[in-house]
Image 1: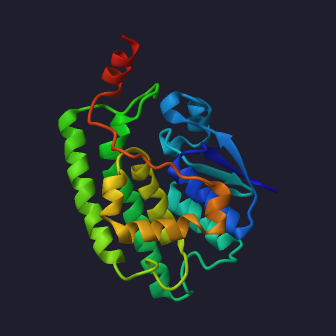
Image 2 (image 1 turned 90 degrees about the horizontal axis):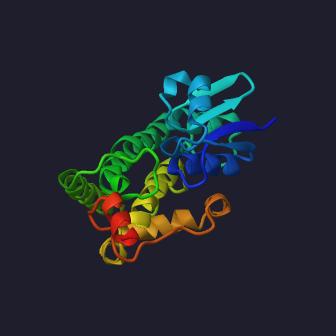
Length: 233
């Protein structure tokens, strides 16, 4: 019986869950929920009230989960084939969990302060403030420089194989690459890009995301509404 994933195709957290399921040979049915566009949100909140409308959610025989870390840990343990939680030692698993938590709470949240208010076409857009976006950019660049330093001379974040740590960091970085981390930034961060490309070429990742989007010039710090008004005038 397939598990039901509540999310949408380009959502990074949904992608991570799909990648883990693909790697472990677990069947998923995607039920499209796009909260910021009002798609499926009301029904989703009724099914997962603790989520406050935030995706993803997972439903299956005897299990109903929200929160990305809980979902991917469950799937990685449900039918383990690829060692996504590390080499098997407690220390290795905790290192993987450390990076998963950092990626989810620090990396994505910080990057989102930069790029999310700049994304057009949301019915329920993130609040825009020039100063807040500028602060998000500065914080993102500092955080990414630390990641660049850590990855210098390393192939993987933990151990000698791809783990959930690598998947989560790379997929969250991809959101920045899509909107704000442009060609100039990429040329100055070879370690992050080498790590990203390694993960992007892994078969389960390529199955879920055959092609990633790379912006050539970062999205300018302007309100999406102002940009739409200029285009429409």
